[in-house]
Image 1 (cartoon, rainbow, N blue to C red):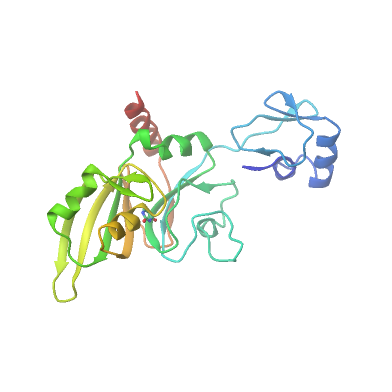
Image 2: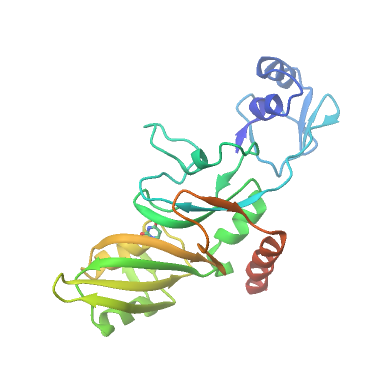
Length: 242
Ligand code: URA
């Protein structure tokens, strides 16, 4: 979401100052209604008209990024830390991340300017598989991991994994590599789930989002999704809703 005057100015119709004047003068409509409030926020899904002329909408664009650790899943950061959109310098569309990965988590994250697409993929009832690989301190038993499938209560929330498997263990270092598949996307979910059974997460990577993998990308690299992949993501997410 962006402020209306910024969206108008960015479309090249007029300056931000003049856009503010036009808004206050009742010359701007959002989804057919006159808006005179300067703080009004709009997204690419809203129809904006300036003096009766519709603003041209950005074409929807879809990317995936291999987010390195130490990057914020946001379009800007007050503390001036690196954000995911810093990797997209040549991209002019106002893209934003679909959901988030923690600062210290690496892996696949999608970015788009299509709000409807982002909402569809983020809703837990759409059940898009998110595959994580965690390096944890300690070696859990199968029974302990099995509690993830039933769901565990953490801070009043029921957190679940649809699948979990120990991939390898290092008895000398007392660490394990565990694969988890989630449908939910709660804040710091994997870290909180492991903390709840007393195995703190040391490293975390999201290896897959739906059918998309990181194949061919190094940390910090991105690629555009193909039209076929976008179509498939829409279809997979919509199918499960019905
Ligand atoms: N779970 C976490 O704990 N962190 C993430 O970034 C994603 C899932």
